[in-house]
Each structure stands twice: as C-alpha cells, then as structure tokens.
Amino acid sequence: MMKSFIMMLTYITRIPYPVKLEYDEQTFAKGLFAMPIIGIFIGMVMAGVMWIMKETLPQVKAFLIILIYLIMVGGLHLDGLADYMDGIFSGRTKVRILEIMGDSHIGSFGVVGLCLYFLGIYTGLQYSSWQAVLLAPVVARTMAVWVIGFGTYAKEDGMGKGLIDYGRPWHGLSMFTILTAVIFFWQPILIKSVFMVLFGTILFLRWTTKKIGGITGDVIGTVIESTQIFWLLTIIIFGG
Image (cartoon, rainbow, N blue to C red; front, side, top):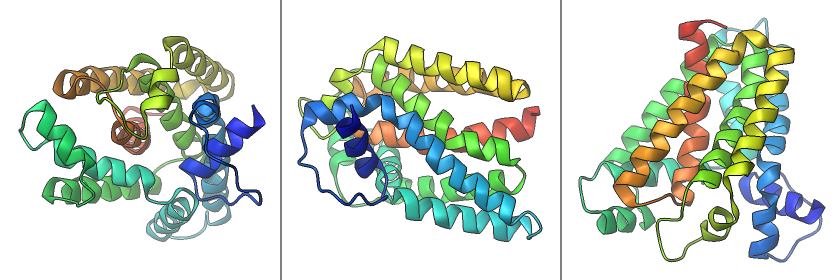
C-alpha cells in the first residue's frame, strides 16, 4: 500500500522521493486511494501560503499560490486539459478526437482552455477563504476518483488504461462519502457546493463518454484542474 501511495505521489506531483521505484502498472493503479490524500497535502500548502500572506494584496496572493501550486504538481494535468480542449472542440469523429488528444502539440482550443483556466483560478483564489482553498485540491482529486470509478477507458491502450480499468464505482462512492462527512462536520456551509461539484462531474462524464466513448488520462487531468475552479467559483457565487 505504501509503495502504491509513493508511486502515485511521484507521478501526479513533483514532490521528490529519495528512492526511485520501478514502475508497475498494478501497483500504481492501487494508489487510486491516495489521490485525495495527496490533495490534502497540496491544499495545506496552498492554504498555508494564503494564511501567511493574509495582509498581502489579493492579486499578489493569488499569483503566488498559483506559482507554488504549479511547482508542486507540474504541468501534467494542465497538459491533459489542453489536449482535451483541442480534441473535444475540434468537431471531428471519435477516432479523430482521440488522435488529436494524443498529439503532443497544442492547438488554439488548448490555448483558450489554459487561458480560461488561469483566469478562473486567479479570480477564485482572490475571493476565497483558506478553508475553501485547502479543500479545492481534495475535492478535485476526489472527483477524479469518481470519474475513474464510473468511467471506462476510451482507447485500446494508453497511460491511463491500467488505472481506469482498476477503478470501480465503489471507489468513487466511498471517497465522496468520506469527503462529504468531513465537510459536514468541519465546514457544513460548504455541503451545497460539494453536491453541485458532484452534479457537474456526472454531467461532464456523461457528455465526454458520449463524445469519445469513455475517458482517458487527459480527461482525468481536465477533471482535476477544472473542478478546482468550479469549486471556488461555486462558493463565491452561491455562498459559503
């Protein structure tokens, strides 16, 4: 279990680990449970920066939090977001969409998607509480477990196949139940936002599955990054 945790940690973040582990698909897939836990560590750092810089201008504070976040997680998920935007909005067939998503080059829709992402996260961080910021990476990675558990792999093979094939609906349900219980007892005012995020994730999964026949690693990255924005903006707009 610890090996699976470390393998997931070193894959989805840039947090260094002194011992290099040999990649094993099954061991990596079993690290699915670690995604929300890793989100807690990321959220604690982001919330800590927010608390330390509480007297700083909101714009400066938001910029520094984004910078530190990118140092911690790298560009893996953002690359997935850009690839997803390029493919899904290309207006092509399922096969062609998947080919575009697999292309390492970024297109115009990918650029637009990244611009909207940074604009959204920059805005959300300026007007959010430290509690909402701490929970943002946790909620996002819990929703990633949800789509992994309820989704099917859209291609014959690929980097995310082992993880998505391993995921089961009970993984998503159990992680969401734990998250909801924690928020209910710690910050009950945010419960409404949690269920709004879940509803948005379900719609996103259904729409994506209809377009490309399932999900890929790029879809998981898109869920993680877009959910963080949706979470923060939902709280700002609807209260919490």
